[in-house]
Image 1 (cartoon, one colour):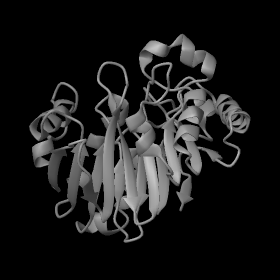
Image 2 (tube, one colour):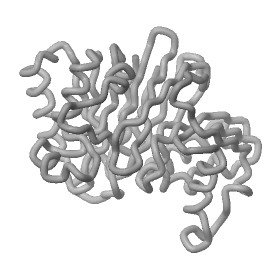
Image 3 (cartoon, helix red, strand yellow):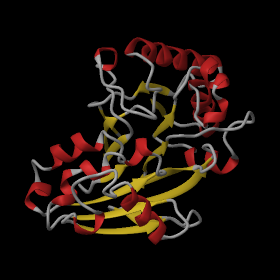
Length: 283
């Protein structure tokens, strides 16, 4: 599998000279299984650049197909959706999965941000591409692009956010953005989802100090991410969803601190990577 990062920030885009190396776009990750399909994890503002890149290939010819997994519908995870150009190309096909009480509710959430008060161009119903939308049943695995996907809700403020485990044969990637655990750490269902993953992409919004200061916001600190990786005995931890106010230098410090915490807490064998816009990882 190949993983590419298109947006790694949380809450609001943060472009500017202090965020050049890690990037300022919000959450969007693409995953290509070995069969050549495409899975998109969240549609923050990073989805815009992903979409323009895809238009250079079969999606620009109306022959593309992809699945989009939405962890939740906070704006930093869906704001790029109306600007994802392949959705406007007739002939393309998209399968959208997310957390909601019903598929109709999930469709209403996506349609809501495209109301004329917020968005001047189109609505979901006349984008051009074929789109089907399905709410996820957490209790059941499902197939996406030849991969097996399982989802669990992590605590995140009042609404929660889905974490996804994507298995392509023996390879596994877990995406766990926007997780705000209580002081006891990740719940057993989350640890089970993470267990043994080749890559765990985990919310690392804050330093431990800021995590304690802003505990009510429902995010993880790098310390929480390290504890989740050790509990799940994953092979590589990827820090993700950095606070919009953190400069590149501060994210460097976050990564260095994560490495020290892993070494101190029995996770020396776990690799650590700081997600950066434009970077790719392969399993």
